[in-house]
Each structure stands twice: as structure tokens, then as C-alpha cells.
Image (cartoon, rainbow, N blue to C red):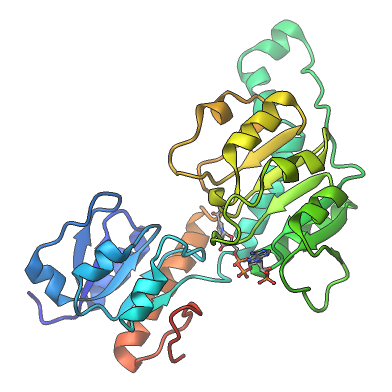
Length: 319
Ligand code: NDP
């Protein structure tokens, strides 16, 4: 025991979080992804938590003196905010500092998917270029596409702005029309899917968005349709997606996120017309450092001033 405030930390969290936190706090490192395991003495001392991904009521209920959960990541669907709110525990996330990185990744994933970049690179590396000649052409092009954004928040708007120079038409679906943009707004996801041939998912994982991208939505994109997911895998009916990719009722998909990460269904691994990334849309050192700094700054501010920088709306906190 050090006399410092004790903060529970997932042991595999980004290194900068550990380095900065240990300057001011006692760190209690725990393993992520296993049933909660902590000694009663440590549990009693924990006042803050720096975590990423899942942090459920099983953890929260174990920590009687917990005051703040600082989540590494803007999407905090893994945190049981209702359980936290019942106990008056503040939850914070890391908005804005990753907008550019994730938007860049979304455009990169779209281009990779349309131009079939992984396949053409395999063609070169395998020696096929030298042996068999030019690589077979991609049947898809960005030219003439209408791109629909499912979500036009902090990241969605950055994706849309980046797509403008590609001369594509842009439309979106959100529950409320966004002020100050000229893109066509559709009141339902299905209406958007019917109007576009390219759909980019960048909504949070919530009960409302759960499996919202279903067979009907995918079919509406048409046989030249491309689906990109940089939001959450839980927004997709993966069985329906695999079926659409196999039947070629959808041309291709580019996925950074999956329903039950890190498990990826065999049907997606087998699909030649899918480009698959291991949830890396924000994964560069500068951006992960910025996210880590925000996690730490929220915790420091909370224990110094009783305020946070970026609280989530479900657990209202003084800012
Ligand atoms: P914001 O809260 O700024 O934007 C969310 C957008 O989704 C808003 O336009 C909102 O509009 C819309 N939305 C929310 N619920 C619904 C709904 N039920 N139906 C239709 N639209 C909805 O979030 P960010 O842009 O910062 O982040 C979005 C998500 O992206 C994160 O929550 C996270 O899950 C994911 N993400 C993934 C990353 C990755 O590594 N792949 C990295 C970063 C984020 P309205 O409220 O009007 O409906």
C-alpha cells in the first residue's frame, strides 16, 4: 500500500495510460476478458478504473468505493453505464481525439474493398504477376457511387468530408437531421440503403442499432453494393451478411469490427469479397497516445477537482 489513490487498470491497456497513471496513483493491474478476479482488500481500495472494452456489473459490484470508470475508446457499449449510474459512478470516454484517424481508416477500408487491394497484393507477392501476367480486374469502382452514412456524428461527418473529393454522392441516416450539412437525410436505415449502393456504418452499439444492418438492408444495396463497418459489429446480422456475400447479392464488404470480437465467423474468413481488419481504425501510436492521455486526464481531474473532461451522458457528471 502506498497512500496513493488506487486505480484498477486492465493490464493490456495502452502503455501510455500505465506510464502516466503510475506517476500519481497506485495501480492495481487486473486481467481483461476473464471472470473478475481481485482480492477483497484491493477491491475495497479501488476508487478509479482505467479500462477498455467490457466492464460490466460483475466488476462494478465488486468495487464498493469506485468513483470513476475512464474508458479507453469513444464507443463505451461494453461498460454497464446503468449499473454505474445506479451507484453514482462517473463514466468517461475518449471522443474527438480519434475522429481523423478513424475517418482516414474508413476511407482506406472503402478503397481497399472496392479495389480489392489485399487480393492484388497477394497476386504480386505470390509470384502470380511474373508467372500469370496482369492481375484480374476489380469489378467495382468508386466512380458514380452514392455513399450512405449510417451515423453522421463526430466521426461520420469527418468520413463524409473526406469522401467529397471522390465526387461521390453522399447521404445519411440518423434519428435527427444534422444541422449545417447539405447531404440528403433519410428517416430510416432501409430508405437510405434503397437510395445508395455503398453503406458505411459509424453508429454506436446500442439496443436500437443492434443487428440493424440485416438481410433487407443489405439486399437494398444491390448487387453492386458495398458495405463498410467501422462502427460496431453488433450493428450487423453477420449470418445475413455472409449469405449476401456468398450469393453475390452484395458485391463486397470491408469490416473493421465484428459481432463477437476477436472471433470472426468462418463464413467471413472464407469470403473472397470481404476485406477484414482486426479493429484497428484508431490504431496508430499518435492517436492511441491521445486517447490514453484523455483517459488519464479524466482520472486526474476527477480526483483533483471532482470534475471530468469527457463524461458520457448516461452518468451525468460535473464538467
Ligand atoms: P457520435 O455520438 O458523435 O455519433 C453517433 C452518430 O450515430 C450520430 O450521428 C447519431 O445521430 C447516430 N446514431 C446513434 N444512434 C442511432 C440510431 N439508433 N439510429 C440512427 N443513427 C444513430 O459518435 P462518434 O462518431 O464519436 O462514434 C461513433 C461510433 O463509432 C462509436 O460509438 C464507436 O462504437 C465506433 N467507433 C469505432 C472505432 C473503431 O476502431 N472501429 C473507433 C471509434 C469509434 P442521432 O443521435 O441523431 O441518431
